[in-house]
Amino acid sequence: MDSQTLVAAVKATVATFKRNKRPFNLVMLIPVDSGVLYEHKFTLLLSALWLDKLSPREATALFIKRMIDETGTSHSPAMQSVARVSIVNTSDPLVRAITTAFAVSNSDMTFENVVVNGLQLNGVILLESSRTDAPAVKMRKHTTKKASKPKSKKPKRPRVDR
Image 1 (cartoon, rainbow, N blue to C red):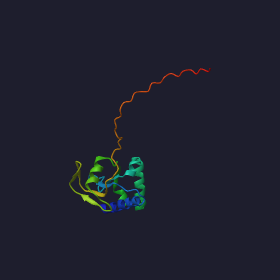
Image 2: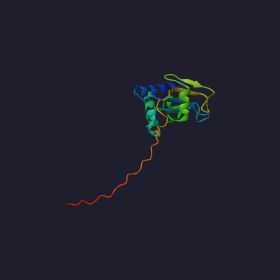
Image 3: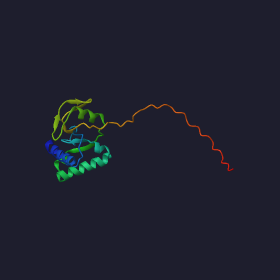
Image 4: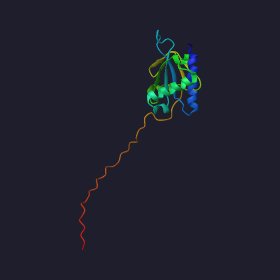
């Protein structure tokens, strides 16, 4: 099976999510090391702000279900070439490095011998890559306050009627 069938199926699935206002920050196909069991198989790496709010299991099931809807069956050549699906948080250093270095939308780029963030990319197909404007980690603003003296409570006097 050529990788273009898988690329077309993943692009169609990503487009469906985009139409429903669920864009992806990173969609990448990483070839699995060659071997008898995994010949022409890929790891599908996904990252999106809206996926960060779901568990990895929910996110994977949602994407796979939509991809099966696009391909028509779970036994399609495109589905059979997916070895695993990995959901990666948008604050992950690898996601930030790739989305900062490359801007890809509605297209695909294949990398041979490219090093990003210390990771060598060989045969990797990048389908979507866009930076997120959301902060990686929400931090509380640190302010210093002057220490105030605790208010002393005076004991209440009993009320006396005259």
